[in-house]
Length: 178
Length: 295
Image 1 (cartoon, rainbow over the protein chains, first blue to last red):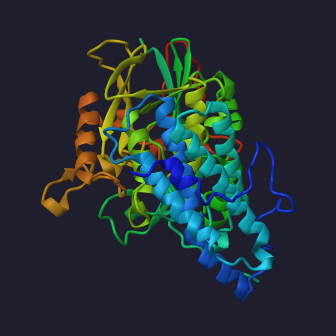
Image 2: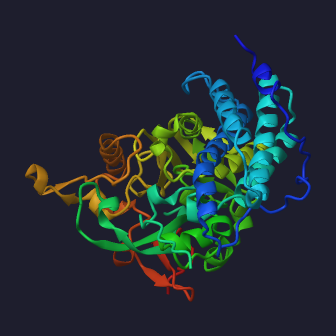
Image 3: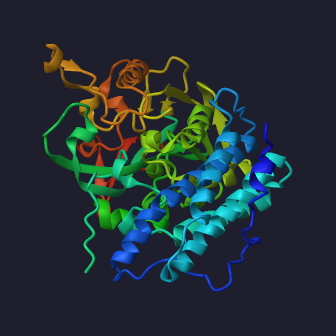
């Protein structure tokens, strides 16, 4: 069976991220609210699955970390949680790195890659079971910040989908760009 | 003798919420106001909360713009009406991990949070499922996992495995597995402190939204009244009905003692007032010597 580290390492060509650091030249990941060009819509629609994958990976990595902090056994939870997370990581990584990003979306794509790098690093630490909790927590916060920065409600790129929420008013999104 | 005072504190509301989401099977019956509330329990040298609301700082604009949640006020503003600060809260019982109940832990820096272990464990499991199965993740904010991690790291998150008696003196926690969520929990306050209490209050979380969930029309099965479960069950409506029976049993079937926090008509059952911010305080009971907050 392939070790997680072997899955993560070979194609690992993303920049190393340290706490509090952003990728040079890419400190903003959002689009102007007035921009509703076809190219932007196309980019966002094709990016949405990867965004959702990252969102879920963030929850998975944080969740595995949380179970460990609480000393809750994952035996009865269902499935090998770390294996499932690494499998998803691989899919998201391949989707993000294999596509051509239009120049206007470079900052947005960089935010997603930054989140990917951080989550990959977290999974690596969890797999190795060596990471101290404070750096892991910082990485989780940074990854979440990246995803918040890259959120765009107009295209459903949000960390939390309220449309199905028990206490939301179930109003569909009615944004009409002007 | 009453050991605790209990208040339901509104912190925001949805003016028009579809009734079919509140009561299972009530289709095409219009909309009603749905208050967002948490509960303050004060007494025995403790200030405890049942749930903490959602994090307006990150999602407030989105909620307000898109989903009609309005008039959000911070715990500082809401608790000030009770002469308390968020820092005074020492204990929080999290009935379930939905964003509007567990999303605002940051505002309670000194509290220890109690949640069912199953709620956490299955939450993590659900996140690992394929996208086509993500309905189970409704109303879950991945960011709240991070808040859970921070609480756990600081030893302020306590996971409960089933029933827990006397978590505070006279206060018990009970699970309702696979009901509204994987590990929902309700809170029983035995206000006379006795093990077989004659003065029990139940804080129902989202196991009960409104009074119809406790006593709805039984036309569908040809009886007068039935438990009519809430619209959303990640588990099952059957388990919601069983949880309702357990809660009603705890209060000896005295319906008014089961407190549904999303019920606007609490103001018709309990002394209440509207604050200067347009939010309601409902006074469920008062401890001995505790002054009223609603006059």
